[in-house]
Amino acid sequence: MNQLDRLRERMAAANVPALIVSDIANVQWLTGFTGSFGQVLVTPTDAAFLTDSRYTLQAGEEVATMPAFSFGSPKKHEEFLGEQVARMRITDLRFEPTVAYGTVEKWRGALNGVGLEAAPETLVPPLRMVKTEDEIAKIAEACKLADACLEHVTRLIQPGVAEFDIGLEIEFFFRRHKAGIAFAPIVASGPNSARPHARAGERKLEVGDFVTLDLGATLDGYNSDITRTFVVGRASERQREIYGLVLKAQRASIEAMVVGGNGKDVDALARQILDEEDLAQYFGHSLGHGLGRSVHDAGRLHFSADQPLEAGQVWTIEPGVYLEGFGGVRIEDDVVVTDSGPRILTSFPKELTILP
Image (cartoon, rainbow, N blue to C red; front, side, top):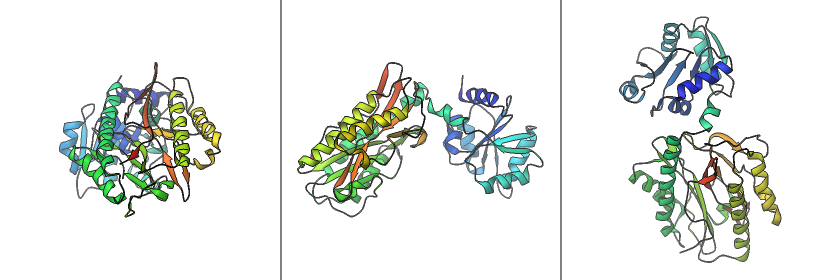
């Protein structure tokens, strides 16, 4: 069963007569298209890919499961959409909940009495959560490149090197290997490492710093996301203690990623371990998120999210501890849930490493 058939099956179960898929990650997942603008109209018996004239040739090359149609100036998008809806004889259309209110109003004005309502949130995202073997293989390749990037840039972790220069080298490495950058890399040293999403700046590494590198590659439309924390020169006992507990929580969490489990319980396990030293209070974000065509793909591992674990799901596992004025530690791997247990896709060593 291909992606389109899986979507139609879910639409039928949700009594959705026709759907416009416009979230670009969902569009790419459904069609294989790699451009930045496209939409898909889906009915029980018909489907059409819609884009603009920038992508006419590309759509013809990449979209194989349905006919592709494009428009150009002076025609407006909503006018084009109205024509395609009429051509497909759609009278009742659902849109994804992520569509902006202003966009929906433009569509409503152009669809000439066609019923237009938000679709349930449970249509495409749950389908994207369970990856095919081909999707997992693509994520694994992106993970291999992220591992290689870490191996490459660790030579720069030494006193006097600026965070910004390490960040640039990460980006250069991915570009040199014909990959995209999944997100702006995080390079956080010393007190900056207490900021989970710190931006690389001009601060220069000093002896005794924690240095957190969070990076990912995009290959063939799929992403990786890995984090490692190092120490420059020498590590204090407190640094070793905190690092060891985060690593213990991370390893235990990965072991708990099994079919039939629940993400909220895995998140709770990580916090329970960190609380052995009263550190859970310094772990403010979720344990992980889905990974795939989007870096933050569907799904979240958090005590507030009821998230059943199924074979084929790919997750990040990334506990962290962040102490203002002292620094922070985060360790992150990408993990596939399988019928035989968790499979780790990222392989860069994660024992405490002191550099250079």
